[in-house]
Length: 174
Image 1 (cartoon, rainbow, N blue to C red):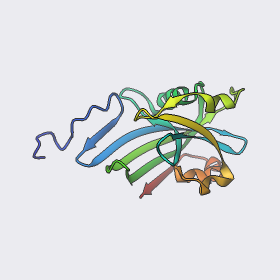
Image 2: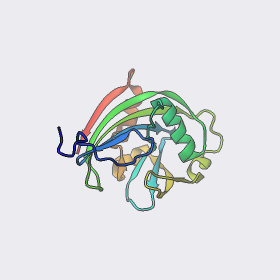
Image 3: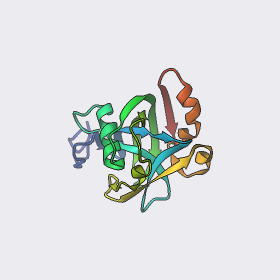
């Protein structure tokens, strides 16, 4: 038992996201898109931070990870894409800039881009991140990915990951 009588849960309104705070530990369930075109991967970046991150976001209560990734792609890129296949289940443990110790479980789906006709529309679509900051999208060259400040780092090996016959389970502990 915790002295606050709440089993260590800090009561913070996180909306309908599957996310909770216990003491200094923050858990989040995330669903992410791998959108590839011409040896590039589509990434997002907000106006405050210096790094790139994958298209995607928190899964909402009652929502499947598959529905979440389709919703996130529509919200962030303005296009409806279907899933090709699950590539990676990623366990990510890190200390955030917010001071929290994050435990994130993310499902990374390769998206079927065959319906896309106007590739530039994906980066022109306006979106905001979970903190309400405006986001920009950018195509990062796969050959240059390792040189960029970009997460997840395993995208630098995406060609090898695409060859796997079954989804990979990867873990990061920063």
